[in-house]
Amino acid sequence: MNSSADYQREFLQLALEYECLKFGDFTLKSGRQSPYFFSAGALNDGTALSRVGACYAHAAIAAEIDFGMLFGPAYKGIPLASAMACALHQLYDRPTPVAFDRKEAKMHGDAGHTFGAPLEGRVLLIDDVISSGMTVRASVDLIRDSGATVAGLLVLLDRGEQGQDGGQSAAQELAEQCDMPVHAIVRAQDFRRLLQDAPQYQQFHGQVETYLERYGA
Image 1 (cartoon, rainbow, N blue to C red):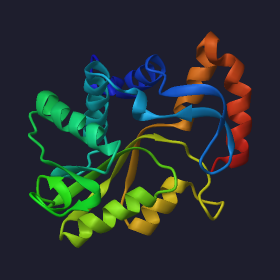
Image 2 (image 1 turned 90 degrees about the vertical axis):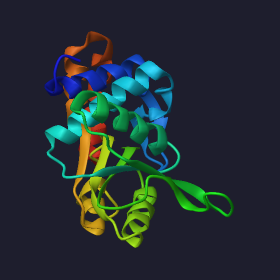
Image 3 (image 1 turned 30 degrees about the vertical axis):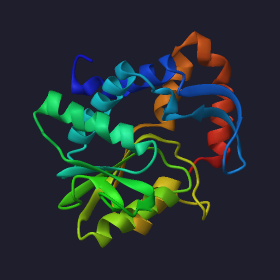
């Protein structure tokens, strides 16, 4: 990556290379039939995690988010927040603490619902994509119950689709309900251009446009 300005293009290239972003016919958790699908689980080696960590770090700095530590909700948020913490140190000389939660509280040893650094100060939530928002809401409650402040949420992809009320996007609803800013490295409109410019993906352009016209906020 040549500069922080390249992080969106780098992330799209990474997502396609590791097949995190796929085009075809997929049934989402919401029941919608989508012409594209995204899963960060395919970022499963050191090279991919190093690259995605850099994308997160550049995005947070570019958005001028005021944060002092990171929180990665189980399970996907754990490697993603860890990768970002490494990138912040390597690229920006920011040794940023990071914490995680457990699906179930541990009752022995380092008992509790969280592990890693103590939750304090301004905490930036790290996740892959906004779906129902249940995981994020639970994380926000956990952070605030600890006495820390939620600095915002940073995700890899904002699908830009309608939320529960059919007007605002799911990201906008989450930002309003949780009273926090929501940031994304890329949004659906960012890979619209990819579909137009890359011959191998042009066949999906019309399907994505139709889908976003129906479900986009």
